[in-house]
Image 1 (cartoon, rainbow, N blue to C red):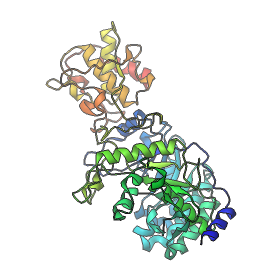
Image 2 (cartoon, rainbow, N blue to C red):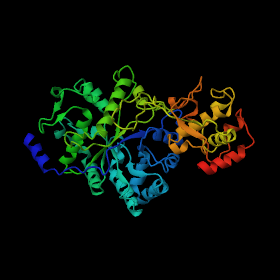
Image 3 (cartoon, rainbow, N blue to C red):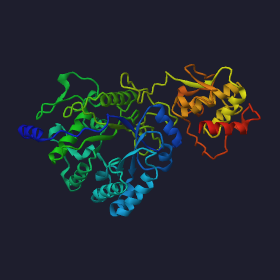
Image 4 (tube, one colour):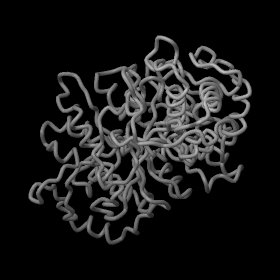
Length: 492
């Protein structure tokens, strides 16, 4: 057995590395009782420097909000649409027209997931999966986008059997009728295998065979590492072992140059009594260590130095999701954009460095013209789509009732809404970026990521909406209309 796999290793060609640097992305689910508006979702992504996301559909409002953001977007054909697309080339073409051509390239769509875990969740539709992949890809070819947008389908790691040692892993042979032509498609289109990897469940199901430290990427001494007896490769964490099992399972079917992208992984921060390891500390450890592992280009034992780009499950806690308590608590943030826990990412760059203690603010400049400040408030609370309701009389930020204090709130809210870009804190020279927190009393500014209107989950008004709290604010001036027009020209 050992000699067989060593020969297989010598025969295998090198895996194709991704064209770009390895990245960390996030999945965005919508099973929230108070889902943030798409513009607020994008603002949070920008503030956290998240440049890669995966959507479970092709939501029109979300794709519109992502326009010109530069964020790389994976969209999905939902499972419920798979049968229709797998049976009709024209239906697939229409789907691409509606959901890709209508937004690309302004919205940077890079991949399409055709269904999700179809082989295990929709076995009756599995025979149409490869048809659906081909039809979606053909529509992209017709639009000359096939070199820009990859097509694949996320698979659960549970279809890999005998996964340790990784060199002995193979796909469930009952699925080979679909898997082999699917892998043919991925190889011929230079796409990648999308894999959902959940060490949390591997650990839970192992009955103690997997140490918690191995599941959480925690450092362990060499004598506690797991050794693949066929290859003599050492494994210190479950994630790498599962990814390498996928590589070996593909090579067993003679596919040796299809890269892997992990489309889902994570750890719940809360669980029921029978899930004692679903804790804040463990979720923090898993995702912090995962991010460092991917971005530090560690790679896996089979492919050292070739990191597997990964999407964390998920951006928000989904409180309306059915199932056990843990199902509702995989998020990095709550619906207001407040971090569920602060990731420990020293030395791993800025992505998801969600420690909000080092905050910057956008405030009115000293000596700024009050009339121009009022015009800025009117623009921010109107066309700028800031939720200015905390400035209403009786609300937390009404006092002190003066134009400077109200401008501080409106300007800072817009600044954070726009991902803290320097150009969003100008207001025709009336604003400046500061490290001094302008919060006072119960009026809390941006450090809380969501209180008092910043990343609040109230729907943002449309660009044509006349609904604004500006007309009710304590400080008024005769240039309201003119101010809105001025700021519309300057900032839009």
